[in-house]
Length: 169
Image (tube, rainbow, N blue to C red):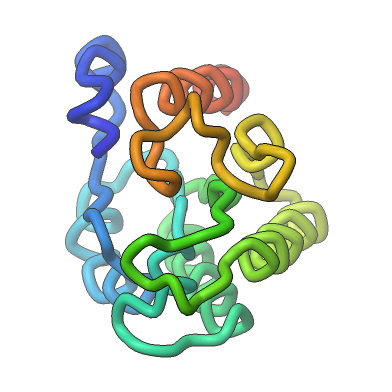
């Protein structure tokens, strides 16, 4: 939805290609990684993944398995001379389409694994979570239209953080 909420961000930064697919999980991302990333031979790939896995959009998957899928994408990128940039999962304390799942602690666990992995492996990590989290581990209400997906204000925060990192790449 990023391109829909903030089309100017992508038109003003034409070197960015948004290949995100709404609702997709990490196994699905891995399935199209060659076609949508490697075949384009970009300098870098920005990977923001995990909440749809936590939501069990394609069935149960553990946080460790989600993390391992992201590491597989990192390795594919590195093996093809593409710089991986990992992003934290956005805060979430409820999933309206799956109310039985309590995502807050799972999001925090995955983000801790991603952050530690980036530190250990000298990778760039963009921490969206800390800038967007509310007191109940939720995506702050002024940054979302449904409690899980960012709105224009949410994407503005993400864009500022991303632009800061991109200037350093």
